[in-house]
Length: 213
Image 1 (cartoon, one colour):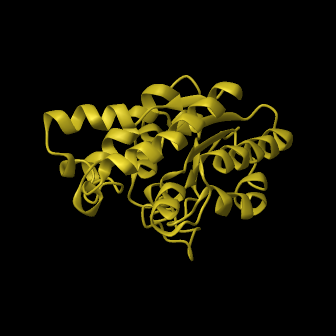
Image 2 (cartoon, helix red, strand yellow):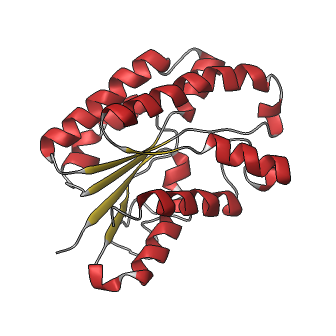
């Protein structure tokens, strides 16, 4: 029996995947960390017949996920649900006064997981920490950005703990890497990873989630 692993989130998960031709297995995973996880684990464990699905959409906030939750998550009935969301909520609030603040973000996040677990109580959940680095335009007043982002990071960790989910801390990992090498080696604009940054996310995902596969 095939195990279904679903990736949900924003542009970092989206990875430029081909949405109009999702039956095309060469393009439906995009070119980000989800693709790397799929290619690495899929080739390592062909006997498990793992099925990877990417439903990330660029620009999505947590409320956008909730709006398409039935079609893009519940109807798929994944065995493993992995979510990376939050940076767009933070950016939209910071620049335009839109999106959800950290309190609303957490409330909606919990609604998402309640619905998912009601649909499949045995579902394993993976929550990834939103992150950023001071690169490009996000280098200016970066302290303000990181102060605001911390609320979303804390909320994600708190939700993961309360729901028994695997939590993948990414901010500390990228901070560590940025101290050894330039920050823009890992994130080309401060929030979107480079190819190497996606490789790091994939490595962290596989290390933290290997017991789920």
